[in-house]
Image (cartoon, rainbow, N blue to C red; front, side, top):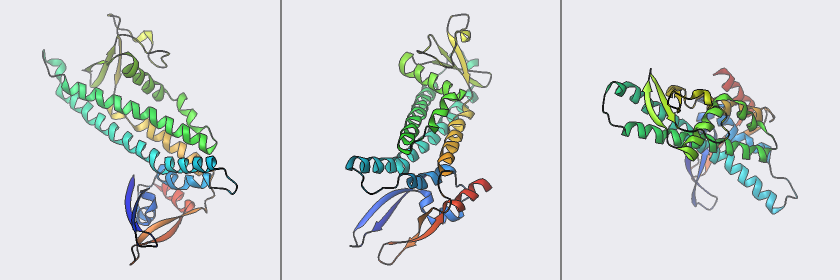
Length: 265
């Protein structure tokens, strides 16, 4: 998560910044919700420190990578959490409605669920793009491991169905959401001809409660790989409060301290 902070410069002019929660000393020193991702947002900048003799293009590349670490990835993760939660809630509502026992029922709640699913799958895809770009800046290829994950193959096949094939038909069967489509996307990695029903259509089920779990677990592991490359004595100046002139007071927090707390939780 991020916070917006209003400060004053040396001339007394107000300005504001968006920064991860870990930038606040109260969060960094006391919160029980510190994660590897929260730490990564601030400490990954250590891996792209400016050096003397850089070209203008190289300096811009470093500034862009810092922006992506501080803001863009954080935004993607918040979108993932929000959309996964909304999908879960809407999926649970559909399961509780027991419409399959009715002869006629309103399909709008199912369309809402499909809209949420499509947005969620798009965000999974764009999050992968974001960490792959960061890998490029940081000189590693950690993000590629996601392509071996079965859940990611399923998510990307579903996204391709939504984008390039058709909007699936949705029903509820045996406490799960059933999707039915007429044809497979190009180069499917999960959907197979064996999933065809007697009418020649493809059917598969989804349990809404599982949404978001796998991608967030992967992102935690991905972030930790980078944090393990950084000296534990590296520190950030966390904001501890305001001075009378509107400036901020800071306290140092080391990576080593924060890493211990994540393991403890």
